[in-house]
Amino acid sequence: MSDRNVVFARIGILLMLVVHLAVTIPSLVSEGLLSPFPPFDKQHTMQIFSDLVCALTLFFVPAVLEFRRQQRGIGWSVALFLGIVLSGSIAPMIMLLVDRPLLTGLLVRK
Image (cartoon, rainbow, N blue to C red; front, side):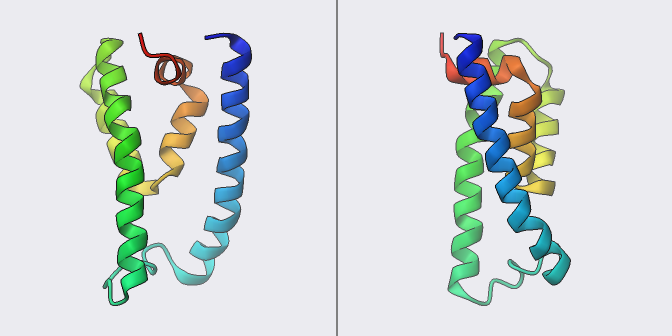
C-alpha cells in the first residue's frame, strides 16, 4: 500500500466526515440526540436505525479482525464499539483518520 493511496483514502474519509457533521450537528441542535429513533413509531425510523446497524457492523467486524491480526489488546475493540454506540459513524471515520495501521490493514489484506 503506497503512501499516496493512504493519503487519498484519508482525504475521502475526511470529506465524508465533514459532510456528515454538517448534516448531523444542525439536526442535533434542532431535534436532540435521540429524536430520530425512539419510540420507532414510524417505518422510516426503523429503517434508518437498521441501515446504521448494518453499515457499522460491516466496518466493526473487519476492524476487530484487523486488531487481532495486529495483536492489539481487546481495549481497541471495546473503544471502537463504545465509540460506535455513542456517536454512530463518526467514531469509525475518526479512527480511520488517526489510526494509519488500521486503515492500511483494512485496505490491504495479507
